[in-house]
Length: 79
Image (cartoon, rainbow, N blue to C red; front, side, top):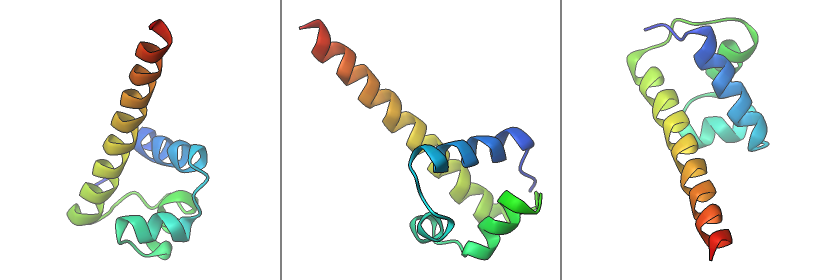
């Protein structure tokens, strides 16, 4: 499977927003830091289906969680 440039950009952006090191993100996703380093720094886009799923699921979870937090904050402000 191949990661698109947009997917890699989103992963980098979210990792930066959360201030996570490559090692910490690797531990969260059960991926080696070397795999993540290859993706982030060496334009390695071909990954295994398992790695693709882990990265995609993490990204979706992080954005979904951020949306829920944002919606909760808006509802609380309206009260």
